[in-house]
Structures are given as C-alpha cells and as structure tokens.
Image 1 (spheres, rainbow, N blue to C red):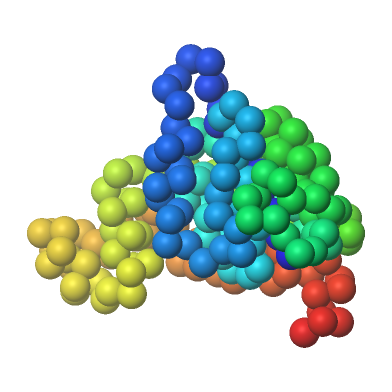
Image 2 (image 1 turned 135 degrees about the vertical axis):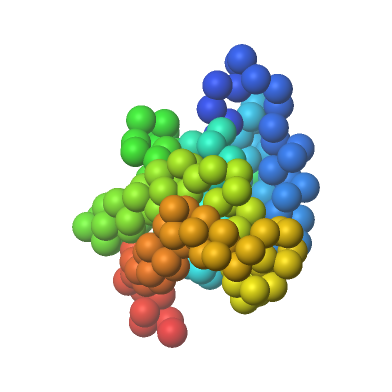
Length: 199
C-alpha cells in the first residue's frame, strides 16, 4: 500500500489551497481519499503505483506542495478517514514529506527497500522539475496528450496548428515525461518488495 502525505509550501504567506486539492482528486481511484490531517497537510491511501505517480506530477505542476510518498504495510481494516490510519506506510510518508521540503522537486519516497526508494525519488524529482518549468502553452498541449488525443485533435482543441502543438510538446519535454513516468511507476512499485510476492 502507498500513503501520500502532502504539505502546502509557504502556507503562512498564501491562501489555504487544501480545498482546491481535495476537489481536484475527487474522482481519482484511491483506497482512502485525501483528507486534511493538520493545518495545510493532507493524506491519502493508494493501491497503485501509477496513481501515485499521476498525483505526484499533478502536484508538481501546481508548484505549491511538498510531496511525501510512503510504501509498506498499513494496519487493517483501514479506518473510514485517512487521518486515523496507522502502520509503517504512514510512518514512511511522514518521514518522506519532512524530507521533501528540502528535496529537489519537493518530492521524497520512503519504504522498506531504501535503495529503490532513493531511485524512485530521484526519477520523480527530475520529472517534477520538468513539469514545474513548463509554460502555460506547454501544459495545455500536454493535457491534450494525457487525455489521449492526437496532435491534430489537440491542435483543433487549442486553436493552433499541428506544427505549433508539436513544437510545444517538444519544448515541454512530453516524450521525456512519458518515458520517465514508466520508469517511476516501476520503481515506486518495487519500494515495498512484499508487493512482488503478493502479485
């Protein structure tokens, strides 16, 4: 199981962004939804590594969150609300979010396999830096690709030429993100070796 603990950066100088985050991930497939734990911090329980990576990159694009990812066991049955959960994955996520506040890309991963966790954090940090630096035009083009559209369909939706979409995707590093995302998913999945046994 994965636990994500996410803390708003510069919360004393900015408005409370937790309600926006909760609304954004309402339809995301999770085991326990994001829940405010304290102050400007939220936490969720997630079963799939791909979902963890998807959420991480969305938060990295927003640029206002420190992202801690913990892998491991959780005490079951899980309570109805995330903040009442306990177990090693929760402890790992707590450690990770603290370290994320000073990490590149504001991302950290912790779990039983510490070497793989460090590798996963490195790849996610690179991806986080990549997506955070995109222009609004680049982000709009990438959103079209993530929605499964072709470049021609994206061009129509954005009211630009196909060549403009291609250029925006190149500058935004879309192909690098796609490859890096696949690597990140594999690494996050392996942070808890017991998942391989269970599967």
